[in-house]
Amino acid sequence: MVFEKLFRMNLMALKSRAISFTEVLHRRIFGHEMSDVMRKFLSNLSWSFFGGVASSVIMALVTILAGKNLGAVSFGEFYSEIM
Image (cartoon, rainbow, N blue to C red; front, side, top):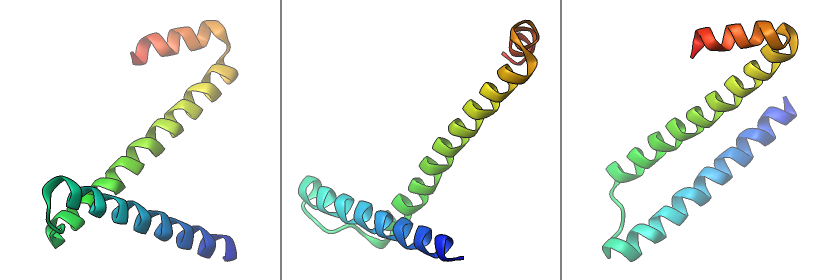
């Protein structure tokens, strides 16, 4: 419970920093403040990015575990089928 609360607080702080950074960058590039629509878009984009990273990590772990459990020949056959 405590770990989950700390994780959420750190995630919120990280997201807040990233949005602050993008607001400064947006102001320097375009010369005006970000709109609420742009903030919402970037927030949704960040979830998509983290989802892609998480998916890649999970697939790498599954591939490693499959390789360890199946052995070289069986894993080669399995991998050639999925690719």
